[in-house]
Length: 400
Image (cartoon, rainbow, N blue to C red; front, top):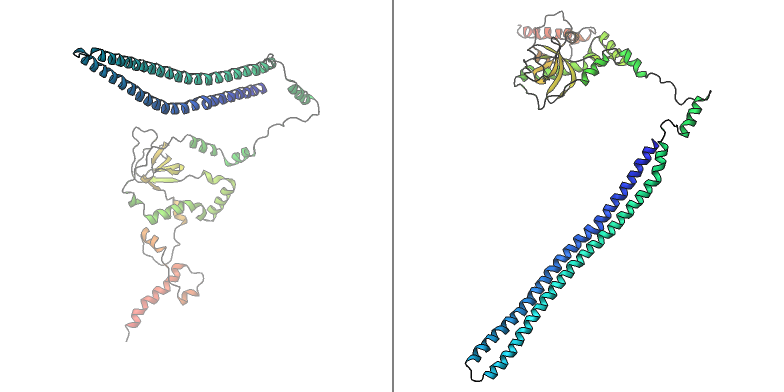
């Protein structure tokens, strides 16, 4: 293992040196060449413009001399003094010949300068590449020497797989010595195993079901426009609060059971249930759940994901995703019994659930003087004297 770590570090070191070499190549060659190219473009444009101007000037002088020579020859053909024109003709011939030679020298000199400039730049690039090649040669020689110094020792260590290193042999001898302290004790079971055993075997299937939950369908679930008929805002808020706090607001036995479940961790086994208010068909999607109106579904994933819930049909035992707007919280009979009103001896007219929800926010008037003396009466009995007083008031006002 130590040899592998050392080999890895060696290759990393060599790779870092190679990266530094490429950085040097980019800095000393590529960057310098880019700068030289920008300067050369400006220099070449200026040199070409100067060359074209000088060449045009020399060419104009030559053409002018040739035109004068033609005039002299034309005049000398019909003139009486031919010797005079012959002398001028010789002078213009010499001028034309001189200017032609001057143009030829100018062109040759321009070509030689262009070739020298090209060679100068090629030599600059070759010099940079030779410097980098020399640096790479030094790098490879250094790598070869470094690897040659490391390789024999690596091969020697791994030549015999049955040979135990000295450090390991000393450690084994210490372990085999009687009375020595062991390296590690016998592994003990985790305390969480006993706690999970007390909770019960149903704790594990819950996590297995959670791990096997398929991904929720893409996109938000379809919300039915009729869902408001079944979800009254006051009733929904009241039902959700009753469902969340049902274990804390039950009877004394239920409260005691809830306290015990909190202490032992058994409250995680209770799952919420919902009742379907619309039918739903899964179709070809195997991850969706089909059900009819009025079915009961046990939620396996309490969190809603983009309007989808995951649960198990209580009748068919089929699991799948379904729209949350197609269901409503299930009101269990135990909860209804726990929240039932205390019976009153006097007959009370029936009121709707909406009126009950509205009645919860109404402030009742204070009890009558007669009712205040009865400390053990209920709220309905305290209201009864006030009703009798209110009934006798019209009779007294209508007397003689």
